[in-house]
Length: 386
Length: 136
Image (tube, rainbow over all chains, first blue to last red; front, side):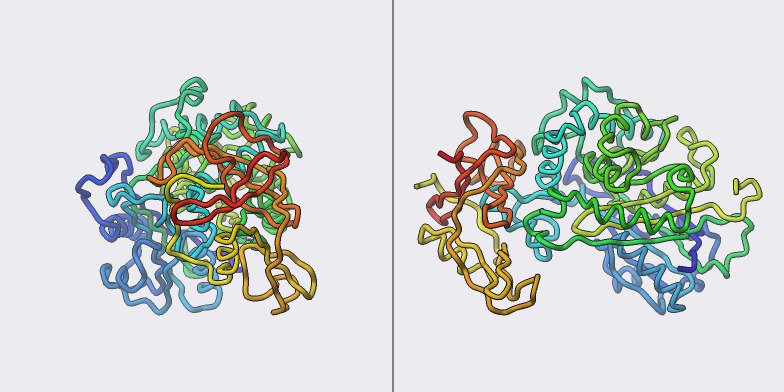
């Protein structure tokens, strides 16, 4: 693929927006999307007329969002961040658009959205999410608790090791002024945290909060800046066989898909993990992190628990992970916020949580049968190590 | 065997599973099977995902299986299923996996991964459901 530049990022102050559930919101999803969008446009220094593509997040469908923002693109879709990024890269590579705004706004907390129960999100599209309602099994948390129980029982992960995901992401969030949850937690607080879907505890769960995120992507040849942040490789691998009975997730843990994605991304960076400054993992639950590490081969086979226990994902570790706090502690922007943090890190704008010397970062997500990986690189920097 | 009260049922029905639920109400546990390649399919589907044959039929299943994983729900989503309660992912002897409850109430010991279980049809007030019980 031809690399694509991320020329603008925008987000909201998630902590300031965090309010009691179902309280009168300050903004609806369109208002939150607009705030983030205007911040990203300002960051990119572009004109309204330059935007010729639009990826609208699922809560704010394309036609209405384009109208709200006064955009008349020549290409666009409604999509989650993962499909949206691939579609935008594809559209730019195909010449359908040259400057794509990707915009997300959601008010899950204000609107009292429930992620389990008879009308759980995606209920009309994914059989697995409601099929088991007669047994009280409907939530994503219940599904990932099945994964966690299995990993715990196989002797490759202990509850104390899993705790390190929530603890280190909270530590990063304590250095992120936008993060909803900034108060550090320790192991005893984690172990006292109540079960939601046992063995997963409240602190293993992502937040439910309001906010917005926007990214501006541009065709690299249109960007004159000496130093740019680029998405230089993308790969996806899907697992569908027996997905309704959770086999790819709980039994195979997407290992084959994660492995295929890593292999394809490393075709671009043959130096492998040594060249990756930080890893970003879609984390609706803490267990996503060991699941991805295992499948990607980021640590030696069977050593994912030790990797976490030794603080390798934490500040100063071998492979910092989710340095903004992720969906667990920064904001549940469903992976959109991870893209913003990658760009901040690669620009060197991540303040007290900055990973020193970072030039390359990887983002991965695994969920709903789809595993996606992206490679982000800082390009054109004279200081870049070759 | 009888359960207490109602259980939640989804508005979203899988069209191809209607024979499965009909059989449950008759006390039978069925699995769809491809007559062409023998692949066992669950939930029900229009064609065999392995060989794309349309020649599928529903066969009685043994109900035997092993606990692959399990969870205990502590958060309440349904009035009809008050927490705590236990859900299991069962690997059926016929091949497919099945999600259900482990016993009718959350009491006694936890399920054990690898434990043999037996699926039995339990009649609630509004629906009959296949539930896993420790094998005799």
